[in-house]
Structures are given as C-alpha cells and as structure tokens.
Image 1: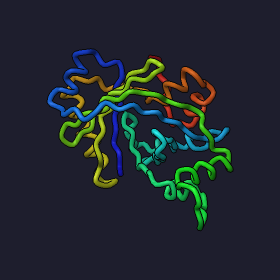
Image 2: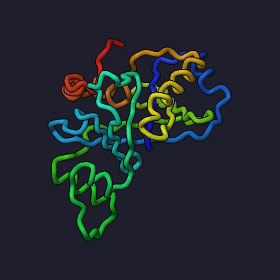
Image 3: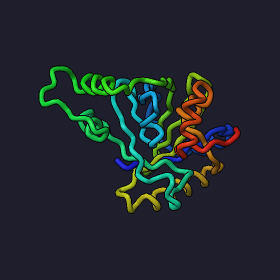
Image 4: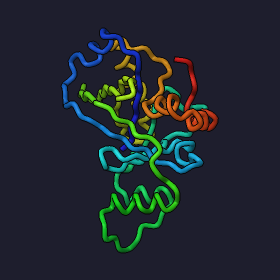
Length: 211
C-alpha cells in the first residue's frame, strides 16, 4: 500500500464540521500504538517507523528521501508492510525455517535480540470517516493532542504527486490551513523524550517549529 497523508492540528469547530461534512462515518476505534527502536534510534532517524497497533505489526518505509529537493515536506509518503515475515526481511533479519509460536511473537523475539524494543506508547481514540477516495481520521490522544489526517492511496510511485495534489485540493475545500504539523509520535517525544526528538530533527526526519 502506498499511503499519502496530510496532517492537520488546531482545527476550529467550523473546520472540523466542514471536514466531515458529506463524509460517511465509519467507526470510532481505540488504538494503542507501541513504537519500537534501538538505543541509537537507528530506525526512526532513517524515517522508518515500526509499531504494534493493538498487537498487529506495521512497518512504514519512506517512499521519498526527505533530503530530495522534490520531496513534498508537507506530506507523508510511505509504503506499509504488515506481515511479520516481510517486516523482518525489510529490517535485514533472517526468518527461521521453523516457527513454533505465532509470527507476531517470533518477530518480537527477533527484534529484542538486536536491541529493538518499545520506546513509546500512544493511546488514542479515533473517529474514522470516508469521503470518496479519501479517508479522514480524527485522533484524540490521552496526552492531550488532537490531530486530523486526510489520507489517500497512490496507485504507484508515479502517482504520488497527483495524489498529493488531490489531498491538498480536498483539504482546501474544507477550509483547512496548510501549515507544518507534528504527528502524534513526534509531539509525544517533544513533550516526553526531548533527546529522541532532537535526534529526529538533526536527521532531517522531523522539522521543528514553534507551536
């Protein structure tokens, strides 16, 4: 899956209402995301995000290098892997020929063996909507941060620019403001683990701005 996503924070009640106007309500879900990395932040400083969401693994790999002058900094462009075997392969791990436990458990054991362990837990309630090709998520975290996301899938890498423009156009019709926004995890790290946050800024993965 090629995911093109734009984040928005500090929505006014009017902007929130316009964002979901005409959209189909899908569900309210409770997500607990546990993020993994090693002590050197080897994954996240390479813009690779490994998490368990409600127990299911996801690895998000960047589709574009953030140092590329053609990279659209306002958007997140990722390929998502969800199968533990494929995640292990993407991280350079050799999957055993015989597995006697679940694949989820096997991956966690392999990660722990090389020092990749949990470093943050994000607990959020999500309102999920669908509006044509767009998915709209509005998250309220337990640490007091609300974030809206508009997401669309690109057919392939050649379709990234057109899909990004479609997301922008849709956001503008909803009266949303295009400005830098931190994701839930960078915001959490800014508040609770400044060393990790600063490492992401130095690596060019996160752009710091004053709220």
